Length: 199
Image 1: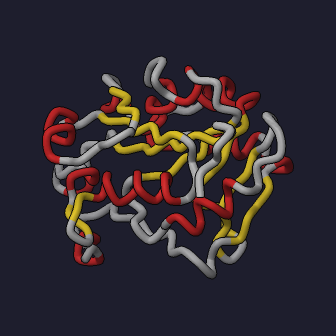
Image 2: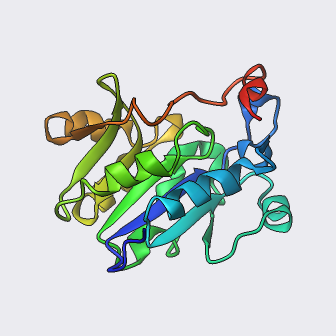
């Protein structure tokens, strides 16, 4: 189930240092026999994204050494300590530097979101101006799809740990919600107690 014409690229934000997790990067947490970064990147691939771009930051060399990354595009974010807002701007290997028509953004710390939700949001792509968000009982969440025409503006306004929220608020009337509460759980692995939810 792949987007054969290259319309939608997956963008996995996995650069954070896990400050609220006692300094353990989420990318390196174990889950179902592999690391969270592998689990999330595979969700993007299995959900039909033609390419998967993984933004690394904290302990990037360790992530590269420990995980199997076949066919993934690794993007280094030297400014990862500024928060996830810097990740969409992280260099020419991000989807913005390709001919992708849209980028579908997933966070590494949400293992309850799998390929089914990725595929559902991806299929909502209509044009380079598409702005689509998964919804959970009506509340906006990830993954989020940004058409190519919106990418530059989104990256420019993404700051700190708020990521692209400013863009989504500014264009709230144009965001197409895609309900995913029946197929995914949007919980975050975000505090020192949360890794207990991993398997």
